[in-house]
Length: 418
Image (tube, rainbow, N blue to C red):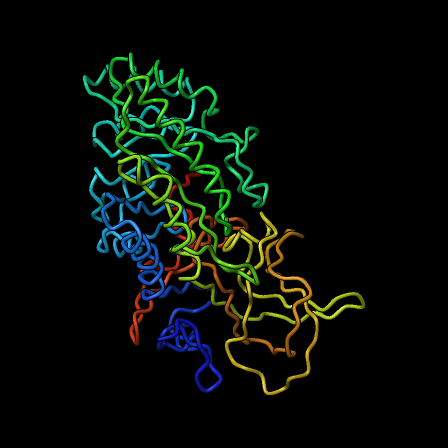
């Protein structure tokens, strides 16, 4: 079964026509494919089992990519753990059934309450990003009379050649501890009460399609693990992060078979549990934004298509200049193409989804699908311009069901007082 395909000139997600989704739930709306989530997860799992079947591996889904509890539950049922970055994500993952031992807590700015919760829940590991954080975690653990299981997230100074705003492994980025300082900080941590060293973590960036940046990072991490062993510090876990690239336009998705071979060569021989943190790779192509045309506006300089989805619903184009393919839900009979700028209704010049997009002239009410929107779509949405959060719909074969209701205006005001 293809995930997205035209049948009788109408775009379907699995076996459900998007016209039917729009009629029942309105627009704009997030639509997800259950099959796409499962297939993406299986791609990772199968490659790892094929090349390193003997390895102890945890696929910790990066919850920030798409955090609806139904999605987390789906992946939990398939055996996924979770990579979280907040107390809210910890709450979600627990409600979805992910065991504490399969949860990794990342992020540069964990609060005292978040740290306390993570220690009390005895999660797999807390990825520490600074000496100051290490000292604070030790103090909190001592006050609780417990040990915090920690890994240092090291910054290997690897330029992954990705977008500047999603690069995380260079010396100038805010993430991680300089790899040159790691040995000294591990030694310090090893002598601290309330701290139990369990691993090391890296994350060099997002939307990386080439293997070479990972190879260079893994070589540095393997060397660090060997040096720590010489210092009497033996690690149990190696968290290699995420950032595995997918196809939005013409770029090639990462080849997980190739990546698994590099993991086998450089990480598996270290005899540690291997943790991966995929988010975009699992969620990206699993979702779309279904939207409709409000107005076609023609000026001397440009033709605009104004749709009912906006930058508050899908922020990536306005934040990163990210490209998402936009497909008409109904194939046009008129094949004469015009050039359009596709924009949303929000009062910002940056509320743009596509420039110089060529398509047949649409009419008021025509439906469009903003593709590859499952990752960093609904999870990054806001109420800017007092626009309600979109509903989210899961498609499973011929079936479809709400996994999040459209937010009402009363919902928006529920926490406000006057």
